[in-house]
Length: 160
Ligand code: SF4
Ligand code: SF4
Image 1 (cartoon, protein in one colour):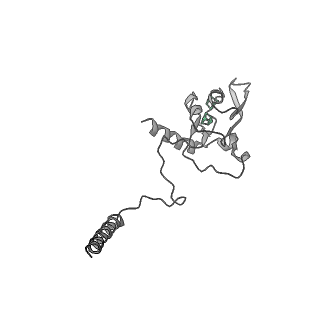
Image 2 (spheres, protein in one colour):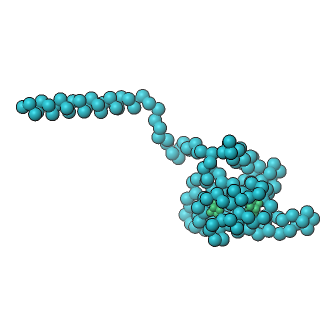
Image 3 (spheres, helix red, strand yellow):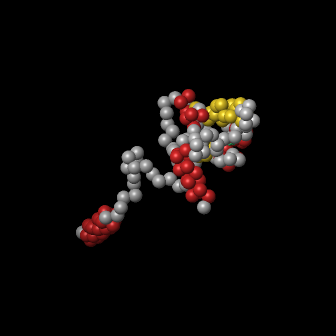
């Protein structure tokens, strides 16, 4: 009988503890997010999908030095084709492809770029139905002037 009473008392105490935990969290703001309706706010240093930036006029920032291609640890992941502009003698970017499906997002290419033309962005939803569609060409990689500016601001925040 004594055993039954002590078990009942300890059961009531445990229920009381459980109820107090529920009440403690009942009025708190939820920390879970309704993804994908609400996108998470990512840290400025997050390394997502790569992109090529343009200047205010929408021209390529890339100078075709191919340093990113050489520093990438994954064979042939970045491929760049250039031609020499006969007037300016500068290199023109004919094609720039990145196989995002094989990219390990190490950020080496962005660090070595002398003109900050290639950057990681906060885009992380990269799933697709085929490996081929993960090979992005110059058009798919290049951001317009406004988007480029937004990415530069993000990089600026990161460096502080
Ligand atoms: S982030 Fe790393 S793996 Fe991806 S393209 Fe750049 S250097 Fe290559
Ligand atoms: S993205 Fe940067 S590192 Fe790569 S080729 Fe262009 S200028 Fe050179």
